[in-house]
Image 1 (cartoon, rainbow, N blue to C red):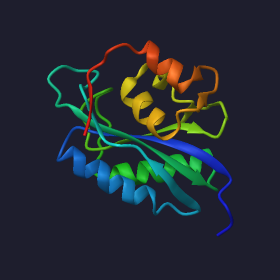
Image 2: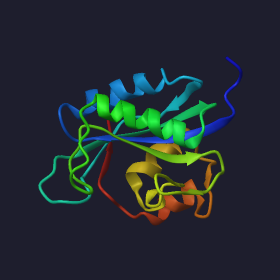
Image 3: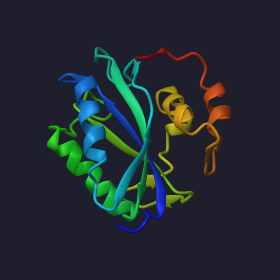
Image 4: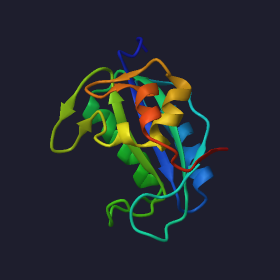
Length: 162
């Protein structure tokens, strides 16, 4: 395999059916994506759910993946992994077995019917920025700013490193 061309960041989250195991298995599956190499993985974090009330807490992480896949090919691979984990897309911000978000794809800004990169809410979410800062503290999010500065603006959201 030739050296993958683009560095992508993937956000992982789960709050159903043993979330810690869901995220751990998904990380193994990310490492098996063709034309890609899992380069770094953050610690796992527990965070309160955003969205409908009464949901269990989430387990979150961020992974850095070097890939030769196009953005949509990578999105397809991520959705295949979600589907294998029984992901249902019924309620916006609802509970889920696994959520894999393509947060960043190199320095590209992409806006299509299927994909928006950088992920449109990531710069406001401590459960994304905290694990991202752990593995790439120097990173800048196109159109938003440096990860560490964005994280400082997030405030004190409940987040626990596991």
